[in-house]
Image (cartoon, rainbow, N blue to C red; front, side, top):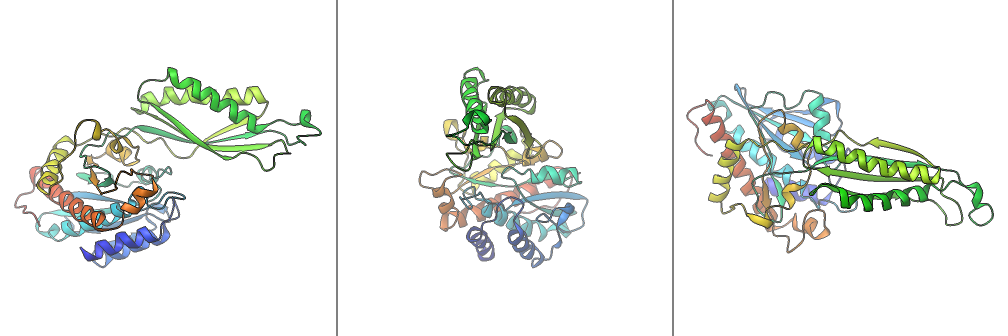
Length: 369
């Protein structure tokens, strides 16, 4: 337990954003190799991915670690705790792997925050054939079931023509105006969108000087829906709003996907029931009603993994004192005694769950660590 706490706190103190998690990946790899795992760094031709194994059995359990942080917010989504939980879960399973015909696999996955690292890994052969994939995510409440939105991430760019805003404004093509038109159109579109969808984004470049017509503006936009099928229709309508900005202003438009879309989640119901039983025994029963339908709706590229192998993605409470994920207060809550307890409980519940699921699906003689 102390080494898991140290890992979580070290990651928290040194946040690295998507695709830049070089130290984080190395620290997770070190924690696993020191526990007898065979570790492959730069796995699947991704510089900040890792793959580690212990045991050589026919039943394969995949434990997923995330460790990227948010720009400007550090570990405000608690991925430092996810990584430490994954190491703890994997160590517990490795201790009995040789006795239970089990192979324990750990996947260190970069760029969950918008980069789709797990999707990149899937396309390179990761996760294939697992009997169960699992991870646990910190949140303001204990909720076993993940129900994330499908999401598309896009980079939006308008190109216009610069001109002196005071002397020659008629010679410019205002790329900033294009963005304003698009944002107004999206705001009006929301009234006609299906219930439960989400459209949100930011302008990352709005021009350089107030007396120069902006010739380039950029932004990042997310569209979310209940499924990939629904997402495709909503995204098309949102893109028309961006096209309207280009048409009205005369600027050119380029929309570039930042990753493959994240899908909805497919839960392994039997494994989830086992997890809920163990989490309750540890004093972490799932909240129900309105309290449940919050963080468990957040999109994740682990959902794409769940489409191809059995998977669960429970949420584990940290005492965040009213703050929620992606807020500075939640980043502060992801280090300290409550966060330490969340790592311990999540690793315990996930390990027990994996052992029970493996036993129920064909391996006998399982006992809890």
